[in-house]
View 1 (cartoon, rainbow, N blue to C red):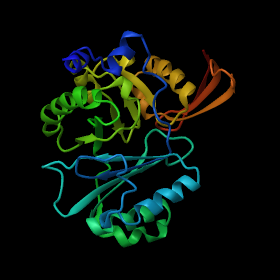
View 2 (cartoon, helix red, strand yellow):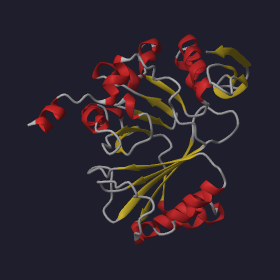
View 3 (spheres, helix red, strand yellow):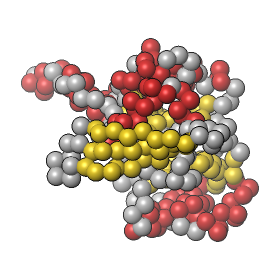
Amino acid sequence: MSTNKTQNNCRFCSEISQANGEDTIGSAIAVTQYLIIEAAQPWPDNFWIEPDPMRQGLLAALNFVCEGSRKIRVIAIAPDREYSHPGYTRVFYYRRPAKFFAQFEKQEFIVPHALLGSLALALLKNPEELPNFTQYRQQTNHIRELLICTDGKVDVACSRFGYPIYQTLRSEYAAANNSNLRFWRCSHFGGHQFAPTLLDLPQGQYWGRLKPEILDLLVRRNCSVKKLYAYYRGWAGLPKFAQIAEREIWMLEGWNWLEYHKVGQILASDEINQEWADVRIDFTTADGNSRSAYQARVE
């Protein structure tokens, strides 16, 4: 049948992107906040707005964010047999803590389903109400959360290529890292043409076109960072052109760069064709004793 022939000849957009030589860098979504909510699959397109008593108040919180033009990314994560609690919803909230920063500030809650909407309102709109949720707060700032997109709605490549990467990470690295590392299947966070994709929190680094042979380096950070060059999509703390410059800086500075507090700015740019920009990235060392900057033209 012609239908089968069409399916057999189908190429994933991530494969076409790679064949065309499209670079991953500069594709990270720059944000100031992440709201990450545990929710059973499948995740419908209108997940955040469909009427549901469990998510009452969530839409109001998101509308408030949209009206304020705040850069927030809402992501769903799938429940995990080991991590999750029946009758409760896990919520991660990450926010940019200051102008200069190295990683996002994390809050985690495990709340009864019925309190999800009111918690979202407290996190995004009414922080004075957060003390009401103290009993549900989790002390997990030491835990690194890695989110792997396995959501095939926008592009089936994310589920086709993302799930095997998730399985490898979940089975081989979670138990071996003394509860300092967790892995989650998650909904889209952009860049599906670079599937399989991953978001590393609290660092806020985005990754794409992941392959099994580079996972050990990505997780353990135990070898030259230069081997990760082709897989890095950028840091959420910077705009697009600054992300491109930041990758080059990271390759020069090595792993210590992740501990430096940074801020980036666009000094001048091609506003019509968006083909170049002059960027500056100021940084301080982890101990705060030294401050310097890189400046570059990105074309």
